Length: 91
Image: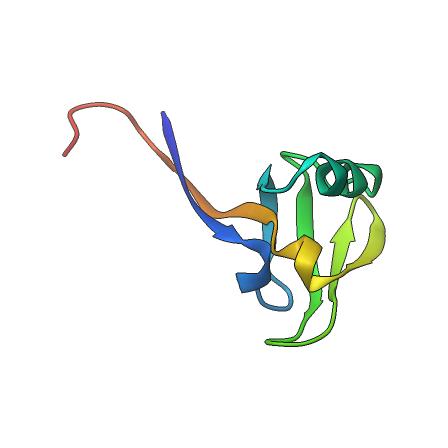
C-alpha cells in the first residue's frame, strides 16, 4: 500500500482545514521554540484563523489553541489529502 499526500506551507491552509506537520524549515532556535509549543513532525493541527496577508495564525494543536506569528508559521510544512493506493499491477 502506497500513501500519497500533498505537502504545502501551513500559511496556505484556510480556516477549518486540518493537516499533519511534515517538517519545520527553520534554524535550531525556531525549531526548538515550535517544539516547546508542541509543534513537531507528525503532529495533527487544525486552522482556527488565518488571515490572507496580515496577523497571526491561530491553530488547534494537542487539545490547545495556539497563536503563532506568520514568520514562524511560514517555516512549517504540512501534508494534506492523504490517500491510500493498493499496490499491484499499476493500472
